[in-house]
Length: 298
Length: 228
Ligand SMILES: Nc1ncnc2c1ncn2[C@@H]1O[C@H](COP(=O)(O)OP(=O)(O)OP(=O)(O)O)[C@@H](O)[C@H]1O
Ligand SMILES: [Mg+2]
Image (tube, rainbow over all chains, first blue to last red; front, side, top):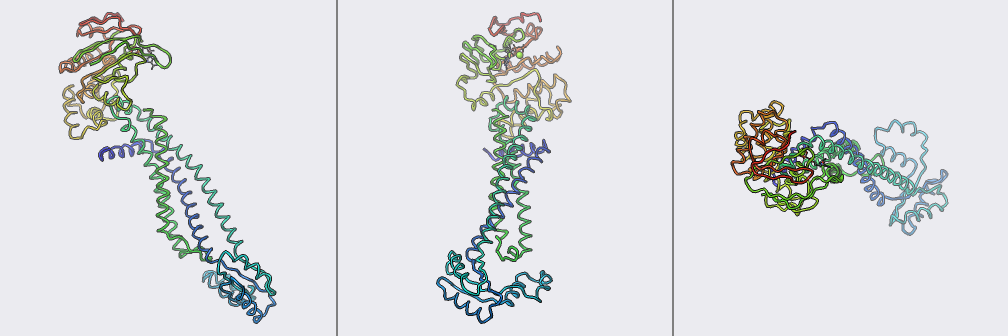
């Protein structure tokens, strides 16, 4: 196909879009909403994956000490834990230190909330333990729990598991939505193109009579579908990248006070572009092919 | 130019429209196809530009073996055939010149040739001065002239017309017939289905009469032969 032909097909495709504006609007919206949901799901999934990698390397056990354990006893327990096989480090954090840490993590915005707390310091003293091998964290935690003076052990796994189960759920619901919406969007596009084909039936008839090739007649409708897909992908792409960049800068690259690092906006934009534009063009092309096969009949 | 050997045509609903047609039309001939309504004239003509396919029989047009012609190759056949219909088939939102140019554009003719050839075709049909008007601003006869210009713009060897004067009054019809005569004078073959007795009996040509899907008469400088 020559450049001149491609130009013509693209121009005709554009004319088709304008020819039935409302249907075009509906189709573009359907694609845009579909891809917006997919894009947001993708952002969450990518960050969750990154988070899981990060947490794997950070997994630690917090052994909370009973309230009546004295400072000296606490240091004794810490030494005991350090000596256990497989333990990389054990650090004693007194009630006072724990409070200061929390204060720092929450940052200046939340100082007021802590104001009331500072008087009667209710945080328990704890020993923070890291394993040589993060996968041994659980076993070490169980052994520590049996030591006298230890109230309870929080190996963090439960929280992390819950978080991941939640994120999996978000991803699955998102994907289910996307599958349904992709089908709806394809249907809308093929319907839009069907209407265009109908409104151009005279032109099509004459083109056939004077000897235009089948592909020459088909291309404008394929480009119509492709353009719908392209515009439908561009909108959510811009919205998500812009929105994510804003959020990213506000959170300073990490999620809440948990200090989970977020994927940088630039890296995200690359993956997002591949998925959104890829799927957008696919949906558009598919809608075009369906209507050509069913309604153009050449 | 056109050769049919025992051609039969049955439509999907079961109707037999042609029942064993054998005919030869040579290059440069001018042929009227006449017969009562429903006799099969349009079907006979549609086979020539492969709008319909024969159910049985052999059919050659412009050197193409229509039986063997792949769907993909049909456009090549049609680029050498000009078609004119009773209802003109012009695009209402294009000007006269654009309507003629359309036929060249959609077969990929380079732009630099299109202008020249559209101008020539419009001059040939005597409508150069109305090039920028739309069909709605033209009379029926003028619209049919535009359709003729579109049919000849690619210099086809064969022109097929199905009742081209069916929608026109007698005077205007004669204007169109003069055009066809001039096209034929250039050596272009013309096959025209018509109900116009006055024209057939005055501008005398070969007449093929079809009744109930069979050729019942085929004579040079024949008469219309029906009184409808
Ligand atoms: N697409 C079709 N499907 C089924 N039957 C058809 C179709 N087209 C034509 N026929 C039938 O085939 C027969 C021949 O029709 P055709 O149109 O060739 O006649 P005609 O001679 O052109 O008539 P007219 O002078 O009225 O134009 C008729 O009985 C008609 O009803
Ligand atoms: Mg007819």
